[in-house]
Length: 331
Image 1 (cartoon, rainbow, N blue to C red):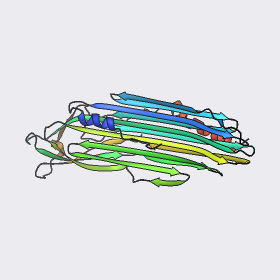
Image 2: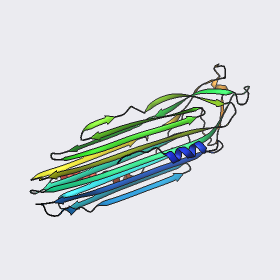
Image 3: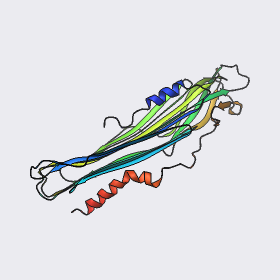
Image 4: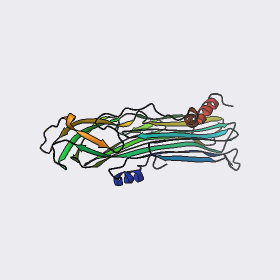
């Protein structure tokens, strides 16, 4: 898989063109699970596992919530493959919450001299959300259009992880997790990303994108502008085994990836304001009107998350439990 978490280009474009008088919301959740492989014994023709593939996605607009989950399993004799994925997105004015999980597993129990075996399970999940809101900042006594320099905060909390294990033989796993966010207001546009790649225990991790961050933007006094915030998370995991002349062997591999923004990518309030000459303005004099009705002078407080149902979240982990049980009790 070449690109686990693409930027939501279409959403970004729609945000940039959104009129300042409107508030718009979009949430997207996508998953794909795959189980495939083949096995042959004593140079016989390969027996192909029932290649199983399923993909689902859901999109919502307005104050939006989207969630989806899927799992897949294929088995022939002592060869098993499985994959699972789940994702969830929720957005309201001022805050975005996202989550994605992927699992992939492969297991091969060879009773003798298997000439060739290739077993692979894969799960991929993506969740993205964005909103735009029309804002007007004003300070009484200043001319309309006079520049206002605002200092505001964005609070980014969440985590990513990737893990797995593999046994002897030519077996292995690979996982990728990723989170990205972007914010723009007035003349300010900034974004960050964080990712982790884990292949057979070798971890490559990027810079941290979470934390409380401060930004400075310039807007016109009494002039409508647009605040745009977007975020995405992705999780991709695969586990599989591949061997020739395996002999009496029990080979397995499993990968798991998890990206969690459910603690939010959120607006954190206005901390300061300056006039055109750089003189501080009293925040008590700063007024803000928003199309959504949210008070941007204050920090956004996360509501109780509308997490997916237990059955939905279990879909991405169902296959993993079966493989762990088989690995502990091989035939």
